[in-house]
Length: 164
Image (spheres, rainbow, N blue to C red):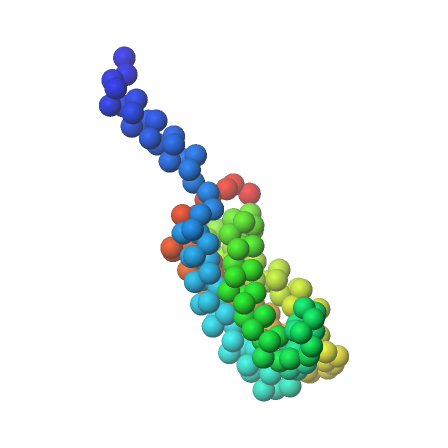
């Protein structure tokens, strides 16, 4: 025989399980992770820039894509905005399906996948050692971005767990 207290407690637990999902906490946690990730990536992109492996025109082209002409500040704003808003939301929806034991590892994998798009979009004809520098520094930067995003998100959000 089940008493009323146990039945009510079980019902509340079921309702809480059903209520789990993507909410304000997950989105805001991922955005904060995006800020930390972007800051983690910045030194690597800065070094690549100083070594001539990344050209400002690549960022300026982002402004051109949205019809605002070739503008480095606008392109950089779009790039940073994507790292703080767009990619973290994508990570919230797809990140837990990435390989890895921890959310941080899943984030690093996510960053590596995002890197493949970056190297195509920001390629400006680098060759030789400049190309190797471009590939290496941007890969490490994206891995740092993803690991930081995953770390912050995993610490602050109610992260669902899936067996993949």
